[in-house]
Length: 322
Ligand SMILES: [Zn+2]
Image (cartoon, rainbow, N blue to C red; front, side, top):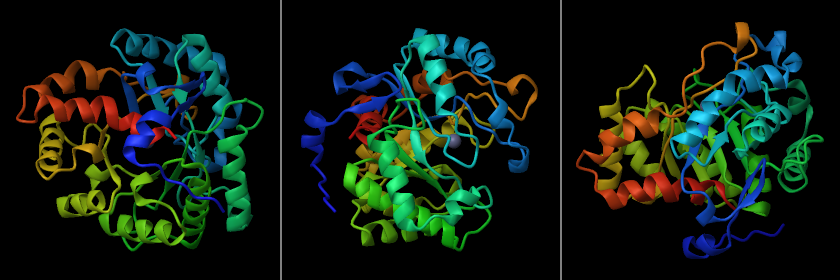
């Protein structure tokens, strides 16, 4: 298996961002939201509401929010919905075309108990081949390639990965090592991130191509530093949500920048989205909170402008391009 990880300087020159609208160079994407959702089914898995969703209904609800995002200077967003919570890349593509807005989509699979049976039945080799095909050829018949690999771990299990979660992570590491695609993991416990980094390293994958998604859910900031020290991106991504106020996020950013991890921090909102298990897709939260409300507060804080520039405008492209 060929593995090649360019240096950060090399990546700045050679890497591209793969989206629903083709590939983009660094100077074409100034503001990329690192973790949002266009479409995700958070209803009971057995109901499979995502299967019947119609693109037109999603465009009606999400289209205006993307227009607002464009007006606010947002150039693209990362869709973080994998298999197991209703991934519909055909709908992402339809929304992208209706709004002329690039969306970055993943391959990958969600956590216990939402892992689809077909994925449980696959070997690590089969899963690797499936991810590689989505990363290099395209997803279903959309013609859209996955830019990155989303994985996830059970929120209620602080002990670590289930056997199927570990199998999916190993496949992600193998497919990622071959393509340079970043792995982003929904992980709420710092100790589990340590285990994940050990596993991907053993599979020949570079820990600096790993994103710890939802790091704000882990109160132990030492574990944030530890992950960054090992090379991982540490993503704070419920900005504008009910769990933590803006000052909490400003403190987290200040903490990481003061310790020299400016180039490892990602910020986002985990917002949107059309949920087909809710009437008319449910409540939609604007993608613009971070630009209109949060960043002005961050700029007025003790965090210096150069660090904010790196975190907001450089790190997301570094993370998701390959
Ligand atoms: Zn999410």
